Image 1 (spheres, one colour):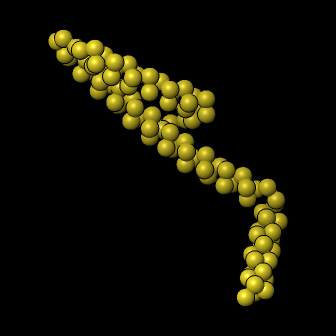
Image 2 (image 1 turned 90 degrees about the vertical axis):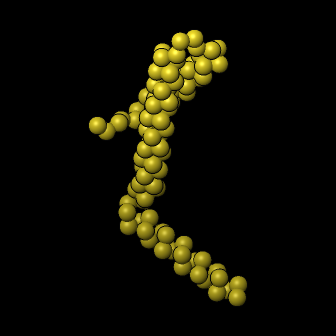
Image 3 (image 1 turned 135 degrees about the vertical axis):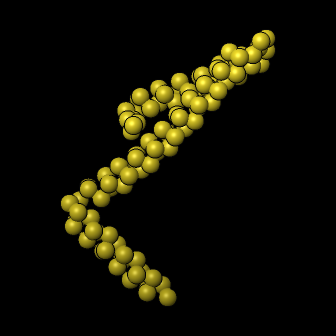
Length: 99
């Protein structure tokens, strides 16, 4: 049983090496990295939009209230900080949003 497993493992390794050589060496690894980057950037944009909407909702709620409580002000400040943290992260990663 161990011999057949080793043979299967060797065949898989050889296939992977052939794929690696066929696509020019490093290209295979960078394609995965690029795909992952696009996935994480899309998730970052989605979170950024969510936090912005949350911040704007809190802001309008506070503006429309007659006597805003300290808790409401703190909640607004937290929502603003979350949005700007995600905004800075998107800017650092040079994420571009599509219109």
